[in-house]
Image 1: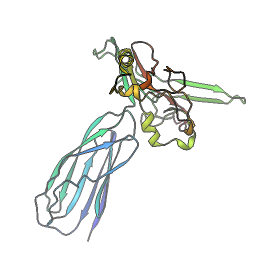
Image 2 (image 1 turned 90 degrees about the vertical axis):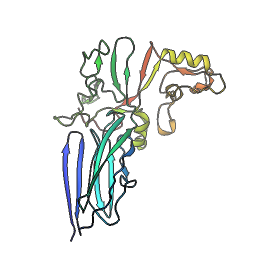
Image 3 (image 1 turned 45 degrees about the horizontal axis):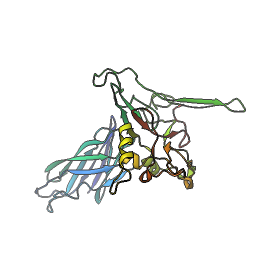
Image 4 (image 1 turned 180 degrees about the horizontal axis):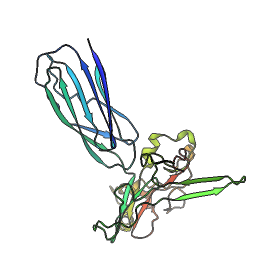
Length: 307
């Protein structure tokens, strides 16, 4: 007889799930779990076989697999002849690397544990950290509060002066009805989970049919440039073999009009005045000051869940 037991336990920022399958007892073998490295993009669930590189004794059978995804990673395991594991980072801005773990238990009660290394492809935030300030900015427009309230002056002192910052934009239509986008902590009208109820979304306005989690991976990004980066580019763009740094090369000067984006998104110097951003021909991002963070966000991508 087989009994399938699902046990859900919810903690802060993660889900813990174990699956227990009771069946005929087998002889103890040489079980060995091996560490895994998993690449994740926020919002996109990845199904990954964490058992593929493990040593599972042929004369035994798996009793349970338990996995934790680490802080902010949801881990789920289902058992349908194979042990299928899925991992999701639900929010942008959680971090770049996290560590979880999993344990295999056999019917012989032999156990083995290994680590899960998560590489999170998340450039949705960056830091203004020139001179004596360190401030975190997020591509979706809600700043400072996510990362331990990072608006630090003097830099490195641990002293912060601003808890959170966001735009509130509203107006009345012809019928005097209020239209508003205004975020506090993205908790919604109540006191829900922070960052789970946005009004603003990363990226430019486009035709609604083209909004997707895959476009989100493009626009949840903060371009971080210094004046010295631009100066170096101007001295070398014409050289054979020169490759601009990523944030100059990918500067979103032009939008994709086929997707309904504006023709021009980010300001740039247009050397030949053809309206096209071409860094290999000497075009460069137009920034102000000694350091610039650039990002685009809108309130059209989804519903206003905060206000």
